Image (cartoon, rainbow, N blue to C red):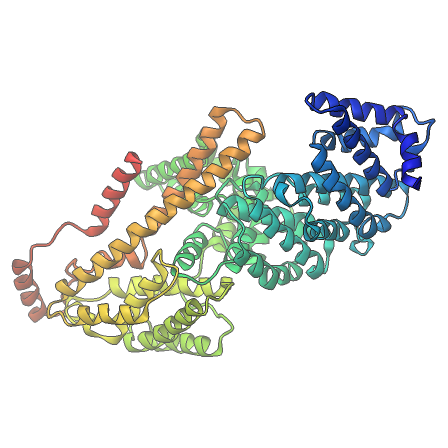
Length: 636
């Protein structure tokens, strides 16, 4: 008789064992006596492999010793006997790799609880692989990384981390769970301060929450780019506030994770530029200034403002700007401007589901309160500091740590914004680098590069907007204009790749047109098709994220009204992003290319009048597109 067989005879007679077997029979009333006996033996082997010596003591009674089994292993009692049998093999590997990390009996108990968590995760995410030794080693390795004393984590921190690692959040997407598990393992190996592990898990979950998936591409970007960024950020655990964001929203950390884990495609570039518009500031130092002033502004009792600023709520930048407009217009006696600003404040608060707070935001006395007695700082002065820090600087191109691009962009700045030839040379270099990254399927878009593309979008927009009629007539044949159109194609398309030859052939057709309105009609039609495809991609993404959100809220016991409210709020976020795709940017200006510019000469005036008589212009495409989009959204 083996040692285990001898001990099993003791185990099966103990009160905890009897309770466990009774629980198995209650949960599986169809089990035969033989199957129930097999289940009992499997439970005993689990206890034996995990050094639960007390359970082989004939004097054991229900109480403090058996509580560990009852609390942590109850879920295992619900498993089928064949599943329990598979977990016995896993427990042997777990015992060898993980249990030696325990420094005392208390940690022994904690690591057994972690075993139960990991075993339940195996059953949940890979029920058809329970006998797979590779899976056993993967799960045991994850637990070992948590238990490693080199982490300098307390027992409670290890337990909390294990609960986060072996979460049931991904039960609808097992592949995402295992990609996440690999990301966490890389984080353990790469983080200089492993106390950030819990927050890193939260950030990965936020990626899943906003993207609806975790892919191998995201995992590679996370390992290569995100972990080094976390190591560079002091107090990362404090700064990481994405749990305050609504579903679908991105704060600075979430935005950084988003772009660094994205593959270079026209679609991902469009997303990155769009989300950047939502982030109050892409600068970590400025972000901390905003957070500090938000705390001070609580003295002025602008209800919700601190939370809006700390959680980086979409639209908070506009809200602060409208508050300043309201104050200065009111103090200046401009009642019409004050009323306009007040209406904007109400609209901003309505978007944040906080319209009831509007009266406080319209109380001028609150703006003039001293909120820092040491410095005499007033609320309106603090609001101005916040506004200065959320304002994105479009006056000069941001540096991207690329000598060629940085050199050209700064030289372009010195030569002046109206030098289209210089701008065209700069854009050609930028476009070629973008295309190269798309063609090589590069993973990881630096936030600095997104800043530069955002700046370029603004500069292209302003350049087209400021053209006169005389230049408008021939722009479509110029090299710089081709680079602007190419940039629009690279950053405003739902495609996952880029066909350079196809674009060149298309633009050759544009340049072959004699009249600018014929050339521009071709451009407008192509960009309109691109935008419709982007709308479709956005709709699909919203649906996927919404389905994940609905399942998550249902599992947490939320009521149908609350779930519908959150889904509607998510839909609103995506609707705003869609509108920003065609408003105040390069795409919006392309849609206006056939609006006649103002002539600079008398000859130009005469020619413009002649052209207008010859051409029957449709109403601006941008308005038509918005109308179609709104109608389509209502139908869907």
